[in-house]
Image 1 (spheres, rainbow, N blue to C red):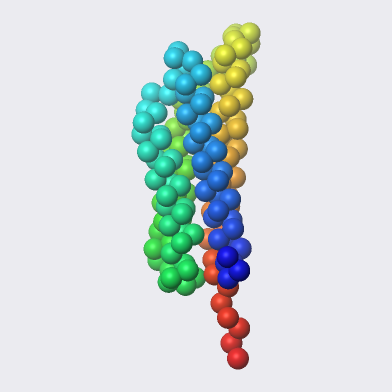
Image 2 (image 1 turned 60 degrees about the vertical axis):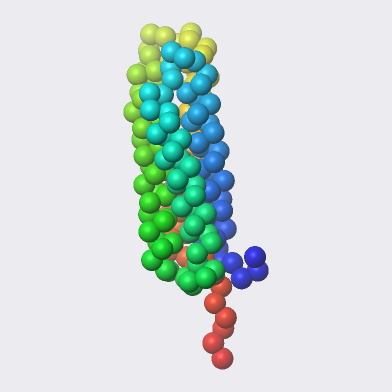
Length: 146
């Protein structure tokens, strides 16, 4: 772990945030059968594949060095999958949120789902931010040239 660069640590944090975002997304879907996400299995698959791709981006630079194409493509795909998970959840929760802030403010289950979704969205967006920032930094410290 001593030869890891800052991008490796940002990718580890992005993987942890992706796991948390996925768990919160699943939790928001299972709180009420009336407000379940319609494509939950697709969202779970996208989240798991995104997390695995982040893990690939953590491991591969140790063998191939910084800025290799495999880790670059895996980071891009992970960003796309995290964004898909975020966007799909937001698009399916818009009507619930609109109802909570207008005519259905007393819906306690709806508010619980809303707060859980906010946590998931923050985790996913911060994970995307860490992946973007980490993609410009070195994953592995290179030895000093003599």
